[in-house]
Length: 154
Image (cartoon, rainbow, N blue to C red; front, side, top):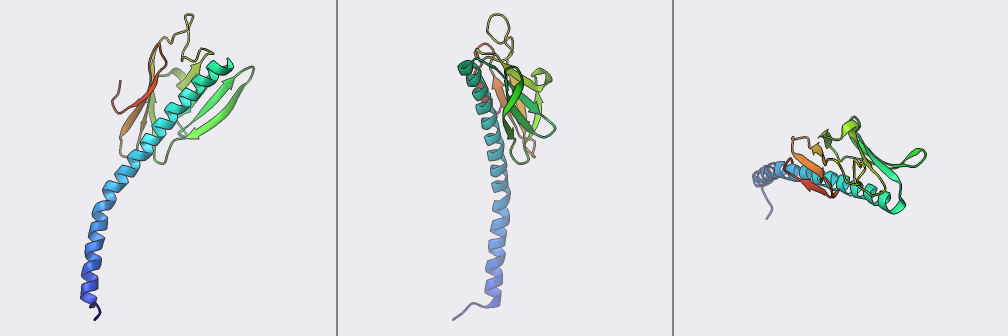
């Protein structure tokens, strides 16, 4: 009334095969989820800096640290002070940005790279990538300062 050793070995082999087939797609899904979460958190952090600038009337910055794959939210009053630091997710790295010196700065109006008229002179993009070279782009739109995440490079 029990199972033979051969039956147990065959069923174990089938289960192992099914597991090996399912692990690779699951790993890719998990990797993309980490990439997407990191991009959304970066976009939300940019919006936080915009809101702090507008509500409190202070200049804020986001300093992108490409070496340690983290970024700092900085309040610039008389002395710059870091008020938050975030690390990108596991196996997620900064790839490139078109913001000079890897700094995004907001004046009290809340728009990046402000000049005389109160509108940004250019938009900007921050590219982050996963271990398998999949990219997501965090884009700040010129003039409005709207922040979005995209799979397509602008």
